[in-house]
Length: 86
Image (cartoon, rainbow, N blue to C red):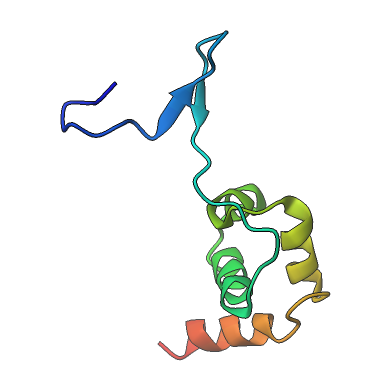
């Protein structure tokens, strides 16, 4: 059902319980270097781990790999450089 602006709401309802649920629009199995940098930037900006996972459309294990440096280990330095060069 459209809202007052003719747009669909950013949620859907569970068909049995009617509970509002977020719409998943993006699913990533792996993160690119740019996405890894973005995760680090968000972390440095104080965004919660869970919100980073949700906003990047991946699972917590992928974000953990990024933050531990298992994947794209140079992303942390690039994120810091981007934030300090402004």
